[in-house]
Image (cartoon, rainbow, N blue to C red):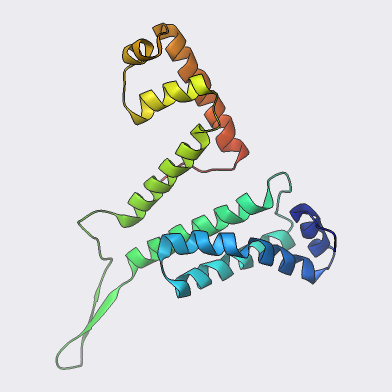
Length: 195
């Protein structure tokens, strides 16, 4: 059997070939499942998010809203990422019910807030940090070095210029091009860097 690209399978599914979506799910199941599980550490929750991901994928494709210009897997990964964030938000908003000793009354406590910090926000920040770190690896060496010194090590441009044996203007120029190229990489990979 000939290997079919994701885009071909999407087209086949739109033309009525139900087995095409099954092929897509099987092809990417392990990667998506592993990604979600690495965030929630619960098989039942992972299974729910995985199923919701493909329900959304199927619905979006059937409604004609899928844009074939993007790659299928990054698009599906972004959906699973967003649904994982939604899961953490829903956990934060769950209400608790406590019974009165007499059994007649129930008290509902609105939204529990944890004073130790916001686990969801911390997770999102670490995910963004990881995404940016991975993209930085694709920059040209001189741009990558300046960006790492500035962003990850917090050096001033004067210190960067001294460390790299270039003028301050050259260091600034490399940083500028690094940010331009990083922005292109973010757009090409459909990465959302907000929290």
